[in-house]
Image 1 (cartoon, one colour):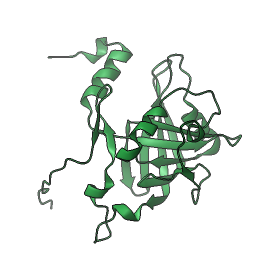
Image 2: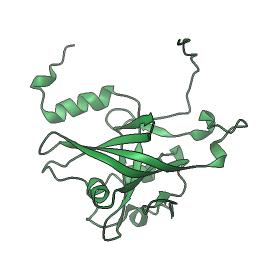
Image 3: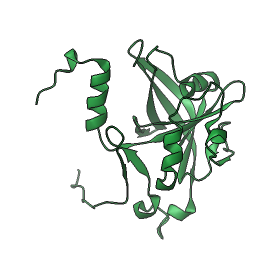
Length: 204
């Protein structure tokens, strides 16, 4: 099957990408507006960039009218955000946060998600997240125009909170204890419960 992306609608292109670029980790991003209103939303176009300086990114797609999501607007206003990883136990709450709430209404309050204070930024942490990265804004890169356009947010990691319960005897994260979830296509998800080990080749 050959797919000519130059002739696809943006929606069809997005669906093909979401169905095939898998599994995708989920950034559960908490922000705060300039008026002090908290927001929490999931994004599955997310990954780490580099350790020098520690940087991650996520992409937030605008609505059909081309309006930026509250997450992006808040980050542009305050220059801060937190990326929380999603444990399997909070999958339902994470999914609920994808709903469109009135501007300024907190998902923490609406869906009963426990929060805790961050150390170096103002947005809340998801209290039960196994890992939370406190970030300051590096850059927002706009890709496309109108409905379906994206704001790619790059953040500098200034601190991280890692639950002791996911650490092994060596002090490193144990994948068996991390138990995070990721996105597949459509309404399908995957967890880190099923794993295999593959030794990387030697590199000179």
